[in-house]
Image 1 (cartoon, rainbow, N blue to C red):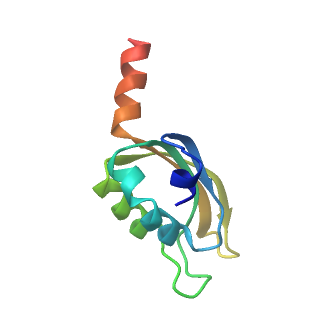
Image 2 (cartoon, helix red, strand yellow):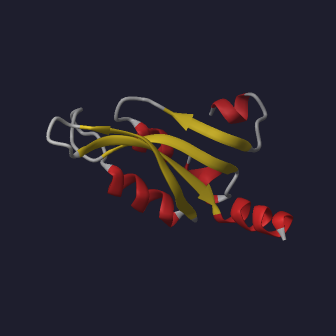
Length: 106
């Protein structure tokens, strides 16, 4: 809706830090994702539940994979008191952007 109102066709980097609502935001961007009009997605990912109804890493991974987005890397790990990974940031890249980047670097 915001993209249509402001005539935004492509998003180079979508950064999300929205406390467990990342999957809902991505669902709202299905059209852009299906067209691979979002090049990079940098988002918090959780490995343990903190917020009610929040998605965990696998939920986001599985959702983005359906639209041709690959996990590129993890950043900024945060650990619990038991040295278990609690959350981190993740970078996903769409197949179209990855192909363009690979061709550019060749």
